[in-house]
Length: 469
Ligand code: 5GP
Ligand code: MG
Image 1 (cartoon, rainbow, N blue to C red):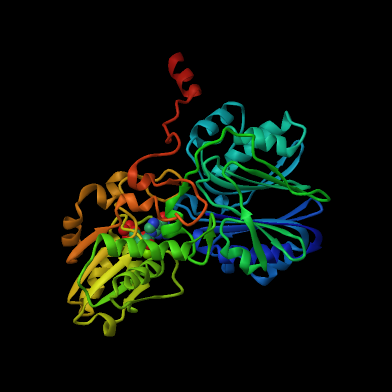
Image 2: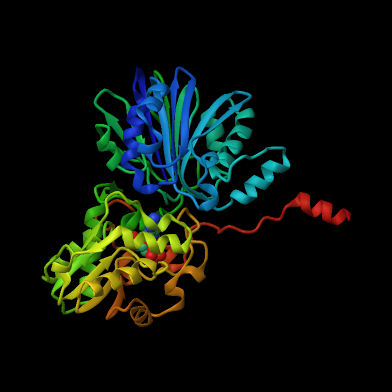
């Protein structure tokens, strides 16, 4: 999921800029997308299921019109949340005005909050955390003198990993969870417009340059005619816990997170793999797209040549997102093709970013064997993925995770590979060492969740009925 916002003062085609921003963030979610343009307090919105360039035709973009600020989102979803109704930003009319909200991330206490709000009479239409968060903000808004005061109070109720942008008729407010688990950056254009983006790669696409990342727990407020205002001390100081998977998989390699290039982190991961798993081989190849940088890093560190071993069809998105297993297997086959000239008769090291369910790797190894690879040594820049993620990655339970059931040796025989190796867990915390991040969430690998994890909700109303009968 990703958020992108533009705040200017002059009337301009801000909707088009958000479109370009979302286009650059498409890798973070392909299920649905949406843009809300704010023209002097009048909101024009459009959202739907589908990719950014499918949903936003010229006509739709023209109809959004001009404005002074705009907000957009791309999201991915499970089968049930892919529908148009779940597309963001969420728009709300409330007693004190209007609100648009978009989120990257997930709350771990959404069930509890939803239950609480429903007991007070709220009605929810979507399966989205954004809707629950907007309800919490609006409840606070009724008792507060400003939207930023309401947001500040509401954020205290949110638990989880999130980067959120809220737009009111007059203001744009962005905030990051207290542990900075999700990234969000602030940029500026030459004409003075501020840009907020989940990743820096989208700043470049709208001609903005990076000012800085939002700090963990920071709230920034933009209002016409005023300097940007930053609230940093509203929440208890927490230790930073950036999602390390952002570096390994989620982000685009040309993005910079916490002053550390994603491309360089991946290359470093490849070099660490070369040290942990020195293998005699003829060629190193990467699984496109997110395994390529690390394969180059392994090749550089080991002296074994890098080769172009797999080609990805550019018109296919990220396959993992599809929940049905059959769909996923089919997609791997049509997504990747081996280059026999690179692998035939060779001892091949194949680097990928991660092995989660093992579906991709089993298919890729088969393809490489068919293309004549003599030996195949599989390496993953993510350590063994052993715990579900509650912060936005689509992994429900441990039974889905291959590393929970099998050793690397067993995985090798399942995949038909000669060996399987992972980045050592200790290395993962060093990946962003050249940047400014002070700590990581690596819960998927080490099981240390930085927050409480979702609990089934005890619905008081149900209980009451039950007690009465
Ligand atoms: P597996 O096939 O083992 O279940 O998943 C691993 C593959 O999916 C890797 O190629 C990796 O690049 C990709 N992947 C890992 N995590 C995610 C994720 O959260 N979303 C998407 N779309 N792909 C992922
Ligand atoms: Mg992949």
